Length: 235
Length: 235
Image (tube, rainbow over all chains, first blue to last red; front, top):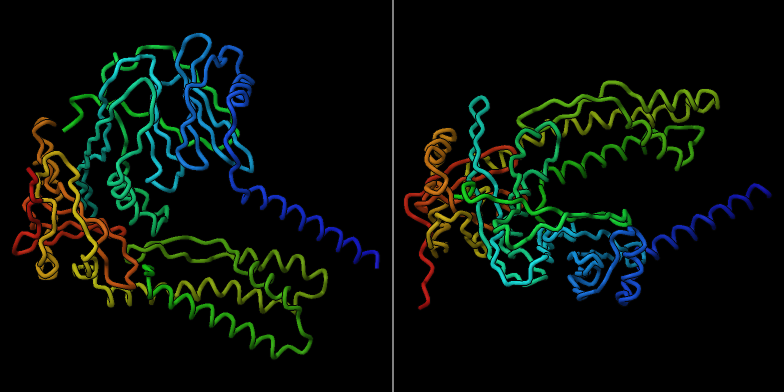
């Protein structure tokens, strides 16, 4: 009898835990944090990076916010927030001036270019989707991969956000598909569909500001640098 | 609509049918009945094995060699005197590795027979929702499929891929002067239903060549007439 009671008790505890954990994961996002909460959360991490001013709270979707900030030392900054595990989590804040944020690493259509520059003038920046040309011959099998090079111009003010063109996402999804299907390590040598998303810009658009970044580790970061593309790399 | 591989799906259902049949017939003959949930565990642990992977018709085949699960179960059950009761279920588990191996052996040729790899119809059966995108600056403005494109596509002839030649002919000049041989991509074309293919389809500069990447292979087809037409220019 005693044994049964212990068993029942264990099952109840497990059921409660499972229920609580799934509640946390399913829980819909609440309203985004207010300025004071944002400031307090960022200021917690690094004494040399304290927030002077929250410039705007930009909603990318109901679970992701980009918040451009001004640090007390005058440097421009960006902070990235995500609703995860039932809470608004700070993912990262940085004085990097431009990054690419892919909100869902499995969905190419959730790519955003985010920037906050040390400069105030308006500028045009070209971003590129590039996959290099290549070929393979093994035994009698031939393969040729055309070069993909697409350009998209972004009009930049001091800070902002721009989604990648929808066509780019469709192309990225398509060129990755045949390899996801089999997905066996045996054929890894053929996964040549590596693409990069980069940008060509003048140095004056992003004046030096000695970069510092702080990853909180609260949530998975899917923030990537924009590869700099030199004029003579482009076709 | 479902876009999976019908041959593999049917084979998987049949395999599990065979496994369930084997387990049920062993159970019926048993005088001292085993517990249901323990049968399930004996089966699942029995599946666990050390295996090697080899390539067969460009597909990976897993060959189980050492019955690790059986050894683990034997070590545990022999002390409890119940090895006899669960021995057969564990061996069905190990044996199911071979059921799947044999089934792969059979389904790959069947799949190749039902969906011939060197026929363009396998990859492009329906273009009613398909659209063309330029993927390179040298693409020009012919970004539309002609209304009778499917007819020409289905009559296309397979041709040799000269991968190295294509690559070097293009790459020998300065980047700015490079003309991509396949500067278009065709998206959202439907492959034959049940083939499970999600090909990448590139279209040649002259609108008459179609380069298809499907899983690990590539095929090149030429049509007798161009399949692209100019996009109407709005003044």
